Length: 478
Image (cartoon, rainbow, N blue to C red):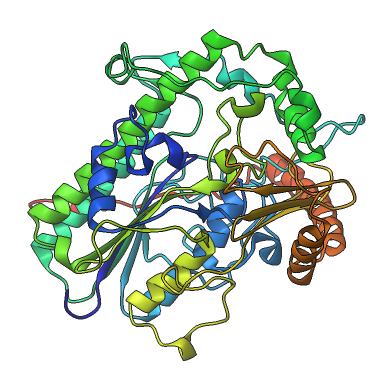
């Protein structure tokens, strides 16, 4: 690879790394991700900075913590004057293009990208502001109902498959046209899929792919509820997990459908890599595969994200730099925040042309990694820090948990009472970086502002959803 590389960033949604072949799962079929990991570097402790879609993606694109951006939930506006990876790479001479989901909220739906090839799958407006009713209950919830056999299973097609098929078609078309036209500038292409995010509905072919396969089901201790933290209880309340059985039939249908959706995304990755290879662009392209966060998928009888257990907060991360160390694995913790400095380094963007970022190059070595979660379906700011073997979770004004991930990878034994010095050290690290009281006040004020604006937008019929432009008059033979 000579000169500035092309960069292909592939993002899945709600993909649990443990349920991929690349991370050692014996059943889930991900041959393309497996091969990418064999050729590139697999990061075995990669974390989301925020276990929720829009804030995680805002943090990924800017290299800043979501609470610094004011992006607390799935209806929080990313300010248009925040420099993103796309802004930096545009200024470095890249053609910056987005196909698929990025969950940008606000009137700016480009955030530095020169072009978007599709609209977003979710609303760009303030539709999902996390307001509460008179009893203090969050008015949008009930996600656990999507995790039952009644809702997870088989259908001929869904609009979410349509979305990912459009995302893929436009991305492949772009890569083929790049090869045909051979422009001088390198590309930064982000391809971002909806799947394997809920609803967990697969085509018959994907369902049949796991006929007779061993489907792992989570097991719960008899005293499960005694292990719940305040954060866990809030998440269960909002998701209404107590209103559904989540019995063996539910969990089987959920996991089997999820396996199929993971394979679906893997096939999309394979198609992208095949087109790069066929068009002679593969050896000039850095490829990054990741996800915005995970999903509890019934572990601890919990669903969705919004908590700091490994199933929720860990993400797959594979970075393939042509000519790099094939098949390497990195065990120390890294963050999605680290992608901005890593990709800017690979693109040769000088340090003096960048603003300070929270992350560091993923190849730089071990450092503490933080994650945070606030406002949406929770009642106090919450934080996580991973430092070596230790993971510490702190919910401001409520409780905390300490886990030794080397001795207890399932996070069942809270060591906070036994390790007060470790707790004090890790809590101090969190409080040195974050101000929980400021975050709580700012989050509350933000919800009030946005709910007022949401009501006005609704009355006015104002929409911010992106409308991609295709000029058919110049597209083919004219």
